[in-house]
Every structure is written in C-alpha cells, then in structure tokens.
Image (cartoon, protein in one colour):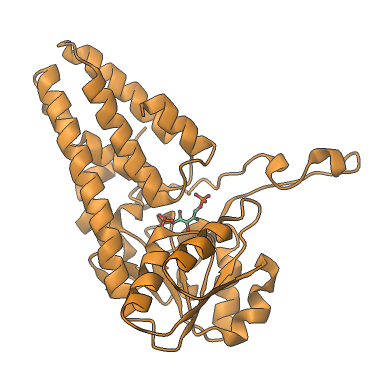
Length: 309
Ligand code: RUB
C-alpha cells in the first residue's frame, strides 16, 4: 500500500496500535521510494517529504509514528542520486521493521519473568507488546488468567480476548468501569504504550491512568511494555504530547442526545511516573525515571536537533 492508503488506514484505525502504525509508516515510505522510477533526486526528496508529512499527520499521539519516519529517513540528506536515496530509504525501513518486530519478542521474554505461575493479569485496550509478555508467560507453562477491559468506544478489548483465546490463554472481558472492583483479584497489570515522555509519564489508551490509580490503591504492580522507539525526544524539548480527540459519533449516535448536550471523545491519557513500577523495553526493564537516558542513548542526541517540524 502507498502513503495515502496507509495514512488513511491509520486515521480510520484499520491500522492501529503504536507499533503497527510505526512499522506501516516505514513500509509506506519504502513503497513510495520504490514506486518512483525516475532519476530526479529533487523530485524524489519532495515526494518523500510530502509522504512523511501525510503519515505523521494521520494520528497525533503515538511518537512511534514520528520516530519510525525519522529512522526511515536517517542519513538521507547525504544521498547524491535518486538511486542512492531509494536504496537508503529501503534499507532503513527494512531495518526499522526488523528491529521493531524483534523488540516485541525480546520484551515478551523479559516481561514474562515478572509474571508468576498462578497470576491473574489485567490488561487494558489491545497492545501487541503487552500481549507478547502475557503469551510468553503462558508459553513458559505458567498457569495464568487474564482480565481484559472492553476499552470503549472502539472495544479493542475484543481483539485482546480473541488473540488470547487463539493462544490458549484463559481470559475474561470486563467493562472499563469494573476495573477498580476487579482489582482485588489482580496480581499484576500489564499495558502497552503510545508514547513514553522524558519525565517517565506514559501516554496510552484513555483509561490507563484510572487503571494505574486503582492498581496503586490495591498495591498491584503496574508494568508498561514499550519498545524504545515509543520514547519521545520531542518531550525533551518541553513539548506536550497531543492527546487525540476523535469524533463524538464513535461514542454515541448523536441523534440519541437531547439538544445542546455535548460529547467528548479523548482517546489517550497520561499516567504519571509515580504510578508506574517498571517499563519493559527491548534493552531491559527500567524505572520510568530512566526514560531521559533511554531517549539520549537509543534514539540519539542528533534527534534532539531534528524535532523542529
Ligand atoms: C492502542 C493503544 C495500545 C498502544 C500500544 O490505541 O493504546 O496500548 O498503542 O500498542 P489505539 P502496541 O487502538 O487507539 O491505536 O503494543 O501494539 O504498539
């Protein structure tokens, strides 16, 4: 698929989840480079610049999308011909996609060690990284049970229980507002990430911060699974993460509402670092307070000067 189709699929949530969004963006830029068969370097640069903008604008919250685009374009300013540029974009995109898929596997292995035999796990929304951890614990032979939140309004919880059922992991679906009630039965909470800020705050599916509050109240560990490209260099510049608000019709048919009643549909929220026990990344399990160092070491100090657009 090309840039326009991928951007549209991201916008309409046919492609969703921060990791998949990132991999799809890298693939879209690769396809755009391959589709241009000419030898005009300037023209290919312009096509790719437009493509990057279209992709980055498709969903505003997950930094994985921006980091994927940056990784795919890394070093391309030095390309001396359209062929060089094309080769570099293809190489960068392939290596980003491979690294991203490997990261999910490694996170699964590391995170699964934090789940004990007999544990009951709670997860929110639908995160490939979090499910990787849960499925790895199950594959290790641990007898675990999972509660999955419905995650209104899109009900990504259904995807989660389907995935768990296919893997043979016993799971139970609950409505979002049952989280505090069920917490007495939970041993560990495992969630994914759209963005990890330089101060260690987590941006993830709306409701995550309520889950974290309920977990803290019940002294249940709250573990975040995040590939390092979900850490945000932009937040080091003091930028706030934009929380996407989607159309009210995703929440309720507007025809059902009395005149003058509003509806808001924020789809992510921020969980402060003090509610997070640890973040599982592909470079190891870290404290949320180590987020700054992860950004400098893994995404690179250069990115700090490339965040102007
Ligand atoms: C998905 C969501 C997921 C993260 C991480 O929100 O909040 O927890 O994106 O997912 P949406 P993954 O459905 O609105 O995209 O671990 O798969 O990257």
